Amino acid sequence: MKLTIKYYPKLPKRKWILIREGGAYEQHAHFLCKKDAENVRRLIDGNKYPYNKKYKIAMQRILTEEEFKKLNKKQRYFNVNKGIKYKKKAGRSMPAFFYCPSFNDVKL
Image (cartoon, rainbow, N blue to C red; front, side, top):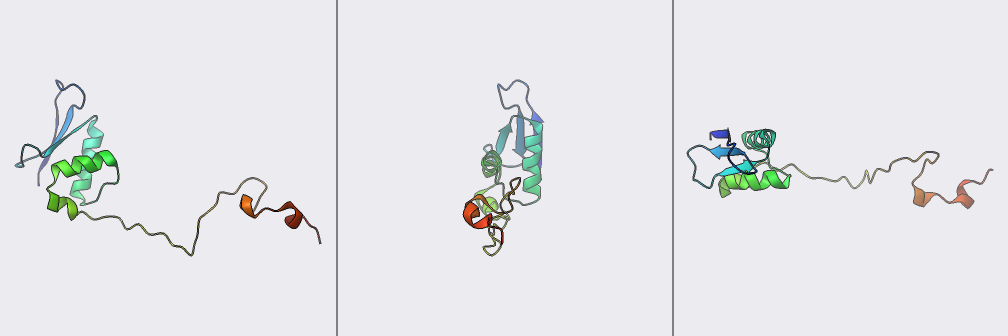
């Protein structure tokens, strides 16, 4: 699949266009800057699923429905055994809800 990035200065806002060569008229997307168009092209070439909303909409316009469904999605996995990591605050070694002055400050 050949993708072309073109600049049209006469357009009012989104002057950068990513066009699918040999595709239907609807298979193009407009962008505010060239870097966004290059990022979408890189995602399509790498067969990666976009998690940015504006990239996702652009890729749905450029790709066919079957091609979009075949994109590789990043596995989202949360290891329950590791739990949530807390940021340490200055002077405390435990999360705030575990801190109890009557129990933790007792000297034996």
